[in-house]
Length: 122
Image (cartoon, rainbow, N blue to C red; front, side, top):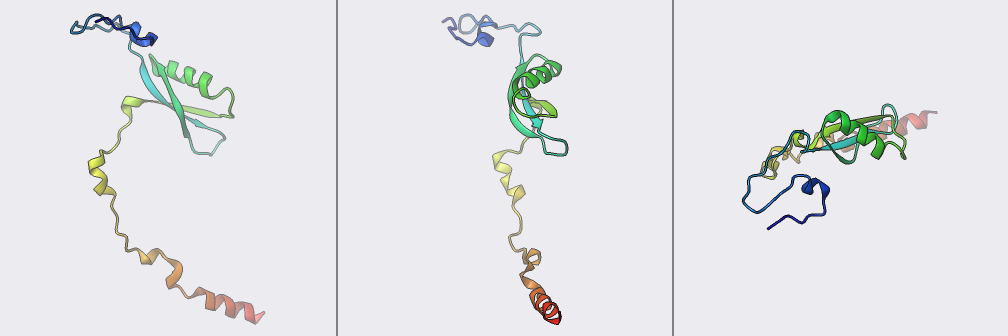
């Protein structure tokens, strides 16, 4: 069964019949890069999308052309998608915290009495 994909990236691999060994030539296998941009100095970088590129340098060029032409941008980051690490869903218990944190509430402080007393002195 020949591969009849319309995707040029798939066709470039020249996939043949099922079960055949596929060899990938250097430069044919482009990596996915996640793109983050910064709208103004001091602002956080935000994820804006992804690009496909053979190297990080070209990914930066592609990202500039794709995500920095129309919207205000002062900086870009590109990160290879395969290099992003995340916890597994099964590890969610590591983020469980103690819900009893009344020491963080301001309700335990009797400040309003002092403020009203101060206002009354004027």
